[in-house]
Every structure is written in structure tokens, then in C-alpha cells.
Image 1 (spheres, rainbow, N blue to C red):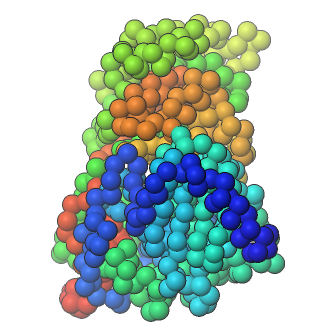
Image 2 (cartoon, rainbow, N blue to C red):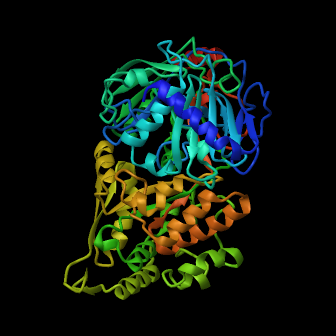
Length: 623
């Protein structure tokens, strides 16, 4: 659409809506169900060092491969580091720390707050009292790496492109947007279908702003193999598809001295090396080829860091404690497959998983059993539903398991000896209720067909959990196989829902919202590439998700979250696994960082290379 037409539409929209808008709030930050913690004139985020030195090079490791620089489409496997610390990707809140990012968003989050956004590309945000639109005024200094200004036209083009050609989850998360209007080169307005979706302004502020002029003439839906331009602090200086990518810090980055940019993105170069195997990546770290490693295998953390550099203090091991909801991790069962269509079968799968044995023998007692989709959060359900929560669930009583209303949800607990016969007997009883029976040491349906399925992984390290679990299931007469494929094939299979059982992680935030539509709703169950891997399609779940998305106060949100959590648990879509409240980080002692506890535990964007430590470390390594 031509700019002059957009301006005419903007004028008409403003004329027709302004009478009912009510007072308009103009600010530099927004938050959900709270106020931003920092004042309008904050000089920098309190967890950064504003005088952090710039310079130095960092090499990190990633497992897998990549063939694209576009993380927003289904096709291809994108490299890491393309998007800003907070860019909304379908199915996730997008919160978290990253480095080497090319594309920035209108707002940027604080690593020490939940569900807030501070003006970044956007200088100001306007919200009317009736909450039917949000306007972003862009900073005149915001520029892409080729010197082209970031404009409202880029914002609108990005929105339409992601909606039409991006991952299907974008359409789900932004379904409540009515239209977007470019009112001037620096002002863009999003109008909403209703004022019930409290999170929508923050969702839109978290969208990446992509350069329209760069993508003109390119097919956005195809993997991107040319280094793109961006508005972020880094540009791609070197790459080898599938092997490595190097990001170079832009000395002319427009946001370097803004409150949202000061003290961040301090490395001159960030190189990401790709490894096909996590064991090889660990050996590369030990050899000093990789500078920092986040360890998510408890056995490694307990036993693999006894090499000389650790003993000499050249490599630091540290646990960073966080205060984030841990969400849900579990073996997700694809209910689109007949074998997992019955909830009794899914519950039997949970009965057969011996967490206590795994935690004792595989994890060195490092983990806590996950009992909620909102684990480590006040939103986690407990006990039995009462009061307002019971009222929410009452209309669906006939469709829900009766025990949901009378019993607290619980998971089997074993003595950790590996002899879980009682739990297996209970599992077999559930399977018999579902119409299965054991004959000749095989679990058969009424047609004499043995129950059979495959547990699919993308990381060989998961086999040490999957294989013992498969052995437990085999004791029930089930033909269970464990298959590990490379990450690219895994992504293709899971995008197409072509699997039986996978390891699934549902991250959560303190204030969940639109991402739940991509996780659990009927619409997401039919959208290729969505995060609804189990194929959840339940009227009660859909209704409760909407209750959460539209909740206008913390109390309403909490009640709806408790109810949703309870329904998801009692439907047994996942075999709950475990969670941890710490990040295990090992790094060569060459970094400085603000040693201040923060909500996210660690924010690598605020680290820097300390020249004195580098020199001392290099000398010590040569001795």
C-alpha cells in the first residue's frame, strides 16, 4: 500500500476513534499488571556496568547445524544470535539473554523484571484509556547497519510479513490485532479487535523490526543464505553455513549510549561454532577453543569438570540462581496418534517413569520433580479446586476426570532402587481399563496388535534417560524404540507432528499470556510448526487460556492459571520430568561481569572481556 493511502487511512481511523479513546498515556515503558520498575529518566539498567570496556573476542558453541539466517519461518534451520534479547517467536515469551543479535525490537526487556518493556527503537509508547490501540513513535537515530533509517513502514511491513509468511504461531499470537496504520515515517499505530488482550501492546513491542528494503525482491518464506542487515549492535562478518558464524560489533550502533543499550554488547566479535555432538563440544571447551559453556547435563556437571584447568582456577564453575518459573518439561505424547488418544494410556506412561531412580543414578540428585505447568511460580495449582476456581471448572465437569475435583494431583514416587513393580502394576491396570491386555508377554489391543511407539530425540545425551524409561515400558509388553536424529531432521518431523513421543519443554513466565494459545489451543494443534506438540484440543483448555490472556488483574489471572494447570495435568498430555532453579555455567577466567543477583540469574549481554584476566590466563595456560 502506498504511503499516501496509509496516511489517509490513518486520518480516518483517528477521526472515528478519538472520541471514545479517553485520556491517552504517553510513556517510555509499559508493563503487564504492574508498573515498570525503573523511572522514565533511568540512565541504564541497574544490572549492567555502564563503564564496561569494549573489546575482546568470544567463542561459543552450539549443537547442530544451520542453513538460514531467518529464524521466523518454518523452512530451514536458523543460526543463533539473529534476534534481540527479547523477540517474540511463536510459542514462547522470547525472554532471555543472547549475544550477537542483528535485529532489534521496538521495546526491550529488563533481565530483572517480569513482563515489562522499555522504549528502544520506539522512543515513546501511547495507550488510550479504552486500550483499543497502541502507538509507537520511533527514534530518529535508529538506523540499520547500512545507514538506512528504521521507519514505521518497516514496522508495518514486518508485521504483515510475519503474519502472512512467518511461522503459523504468529497468526495465533497476534489474532487480536485489527490493523496497523503508518501515520508518519516515525509513527505506527496498531488497532485491536477488543480491549481484552492485556498483553498485546507488549507482544507487538517485542516484534523484530526487519528491513523492508533488504527483503524486497527476496522470497521471505525461503531460507536466507545472504547475511542480512539489521538495526542491532552486531553485523555478520564471516560465516560458513552449517559450521560457524561470526558477529562483529558495530562501532556506530545508534543505541550504544541509550539507557537500554549502555553497558551491553561489549564484545568486539562473537563467534558461534557448531558441533554435531555435545561431547565433542565439551572437549572443545576443555581445550580452550570455547570460552563459556552452559551445562544442562547434571552428570557432566558432577563428573566432567575435573580437568587441570578447573583445579588451577583457570576455568570457573558457578551456579547462577534464578527466580524464573521453570515451566514444564516432559515426555510429550502425540494424541493425534491412536496409541495415545486415550488419557488412561497416557497416565500409564507416567506411572512407568521412575524419576527417583533417574535422579539418584543419572542426575546426582540435582533435580526436583515437576508437578505443574507453572512450576516455581504462584500460578502452580495445588490441593483441589475451590471457590472461584471451582466455578471456572464447573461448566466442564462432565468432560473432565472426576478425580480432578476430589483429589490433589500427584505423581508416583518410588524408593529409587529401580524396582518400581508397584507403579508398573498400576500402569498395567490403567492399560487394561483402556482395553489393552497382556498375552504372551505382549501388550495387545482387541485386534491382537501389540502397542508400539518410538521415543524421538535430537540429542544423543537424552538417550541415557530415554533408554531406561523404554526398558520400564517394555516390562509392560510394549514395543518401545528410542531413535535419535540430527536437529534439522528433528525440526522437520516435529513441525509436521510426525512423531509418537518427544521430550518437550514449555517455558513459562510470571505473567503468561498469548504464548499459551500457541502451546495448548485447538487452533495451535492444527497449525504446522506450532508448540502444541501433544495435539491438545479441549474446550475447557481453550476457554481457560482465553481467561488468562484477557485477565485484567493478578487475582483473576492466578485463578485461571490454577484451573488450566489442573486440567492439563489431569489430561496427562506429558509425562512430567524435572526442573532446576540454577544455571550451571563454566567459563575460562577471562570475563568481567556485574556480580549482582538478578531475576534471570545470568545476563551474558552485560559481560565483558577483562584484558588483565586474559593476560594472566594466557600466561598460566602456557606454564
